[in-house]
Image (cartoon, rainbow, N blue to C red; front, top):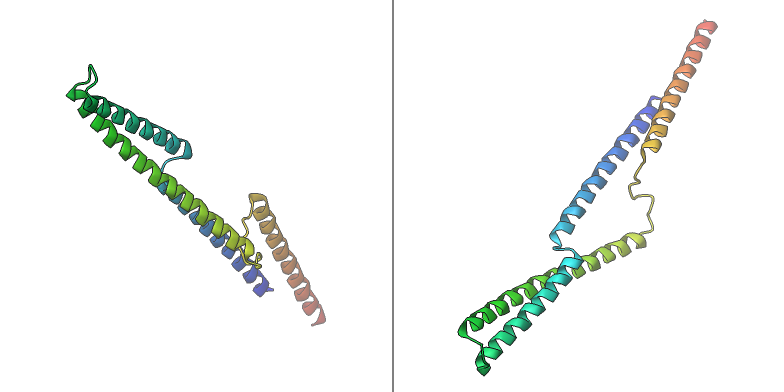
Length: 161
């Protein structure tokens, strides 16, 4: 009887440990998602802005080199600056886009591995508050039942003497 109590207490402790491990895993996932870079819309806007700056810088430089009217060497400097900034934006946004795609692929592979594992019972189960309350109630009921059985056994033993 005491062994059953110890087992149940041990199981509840193991469940709590598994839950805390799951929470830690979720925290690391959110930290990893922060490391993935910018959100998708920001990456797309950065790509567009980078292409626009590269195009504008090219046009400014080509107009100065072609000797068009109104084109001065100041426009050439601005064009070079636009080319450098646009190329930098394209590089950063491309790197973030590749990082996001790689993270998605890794997540899909991990999900496939988890789904392919037949031992779903071994995986820690996340318990709701209501399930925890029911578990605590059942433990308390078993303890009360064992205590009453022990009292009955003690009274029977005393009656026999």
